[in-house]
Image 1: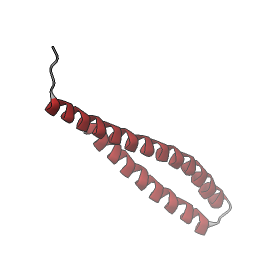
Image 2 (image 1 turned 90 degrees about the vertical axis):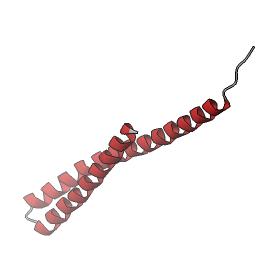
Image 3 (image 1 turned 180 degrees about the vertical axis):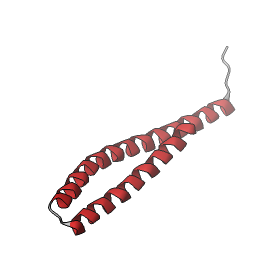
Length: 86
């Protein structure tokens, strides 16, 4: 004999779809974080080069870009935390 539980199967499908969505978001955020890490290294080098050459305008520009990128990384971290909690 067999038993069927259509309501539970539908609920399981919905949960698995949600897990797939969260996993896709996590992968996207992880890739973005890796890209941002490489960009951070580049921006730090450029800003420090500008500082050593006395180019305060470009130094300030570089550090402002770093600030914005850092804010993006923090927002991505918060999203990952929320996904993990779900």
